[in-house]
Length: 320
Image (cartoon, rainbow, N blue to C red; front, side, top):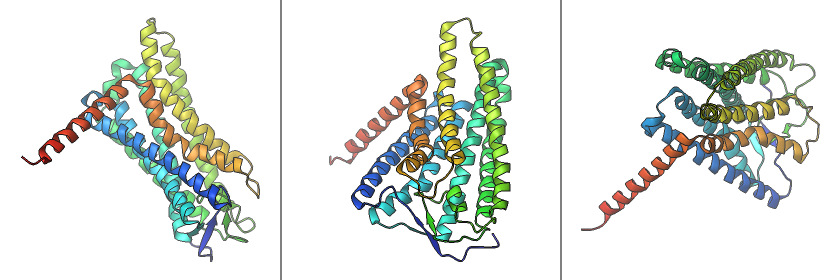
């Protein structure tokens, strides 16, 4: 990051210029954030505390939930605070850190979804070799690869973005420091280096997409050959939630980054951004818990265990 911009910060444009509507949007964001936080925390608790969920699939699901918490926490809390405080400024270094964390989490989430699709492929297409292939070392190496890919992508994207000079008004037409919006502020053709990084990362995204597509093509081909209707239903029950998560994340993210960005974004542009930044972490726990009987049973056991513990603690706290 050699050529830092001389500006000290940026202005983030909210959803509305009217204070009462801004507070309304902030309240909606707060509700969605609390739902995402609660849902993903419950999945982490269930997969950590329930012995029946000690398998690679739930091990990766636990890490996906942790990633979802990080992903939504990068942008939403700051936006909520800005709206309630009726301020829109963000310092240069805060913007850099937010951009780094957002790209890191988004890239890591895509890598995690790719690893999870491979896990489902091995489980359904190679069931006799599943425990051999998806052993402890494979799972740990998969998680390490996820985080390393996220860090590398985040550093590359952020370094290229903030190595350019920014011209004109330092107004970001978004509720967080989004890379495409930052590039619109670049002087002349200084964003060429960032385009090179974007092309490289786009290639990585394409490879992940092809890998996921290959895995699910083989999975559905195998599932459709299962003679038992119950067996097919069980296989679909474990695969369809993951496929729904992948579709939601990739389709909304790709549409946001590939669509042309206007100089004066509309409310629809902000709404589309909401679809790929806030909705995936919020809906992921619902998708997995609603379609997975083992997860629903584990969540019920965790809630009952928590209630029993709270009751025991309250009884102990009573004076004798």
